[in-house]
Length: 372
Ligand SMILES: *Cc1c(COP(=O)(O)O)cnc(C)c1O
Image (cartoon, helix red, strand yellow):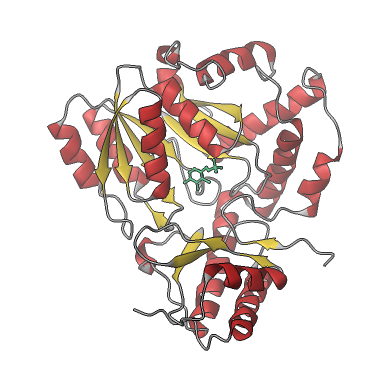
């Protein structure tokens, strides 16, 4: 097989040849040329959220979770109290890292098949004055639910609470406007909807809270305030930057802008999503979520009811036809997930459905219809 397999996963994802080629050079981390790339990436990122006036953006080495952890450690004072809105696996991860950072953490649970409720958040904030910050996952990649960011942001603003948003799987594809939605920190990463390669995250921090963040972090490497101060002073990253990841992201952002920015990306992903769900539906598969709460980012499907189905063999069969699927992340029922993001379009989604059809045939499964 001389073609890379198509990744139908929510990061790492399929990147363009142009993005991959950008990584074929070595860069000195002190060098002015590399610092210019970092500066350009930061300026472009701020533009995407319309945060030029209100926010700064601080990049950080590591996968996306490193940046979520860094955002909590940097933004929440050590005696702060965080309310984590939980409707899935990535919310639970945010709660766990908050506790491990030594911050008091309360979890407000919701059903994983529905968005969190801003009204419930408002009630909880009214009840417990000790809460200082709320953590919201914008698109819960676990099931694929889109959570109501503007409404939750409004509830936090009304109650005078800080808001930390994990927008990892939505940033660049779904609209987020810092001029209209108030957040203290918003976290995303290189290897998601911007279609770069994995290896760095970035956190938008509201300028008004920046000074107050000094000294909050109990970690040296994860201190975004320190990283920001150093970067502003020197133009450099504090510690060794993921140079190849940064230049690949710069190249990916150039293509993002040329494609038409966030609206164009959302349109392509929405088309990918429809192509996928229509095609899978013809094979008998049923999505787990109500389409009304589904983000066009990743789709959770019920596993086929046929006793011959096992995710492992299904995965291997689809892989042999060139497509990488993703396991489910729900606790109660058997599912698998298919991502709609990455440098792919309608053709790839049609081919993916065809690969799934062949996989079913090879496993002797008549239909994707679930047992329920
Ligand atoms: C991808 C993702 C993350 C980060 O996961 P990593 O494995 O650390 O890259 C965090 N939150 C959400 C919602 C995600 O989709």
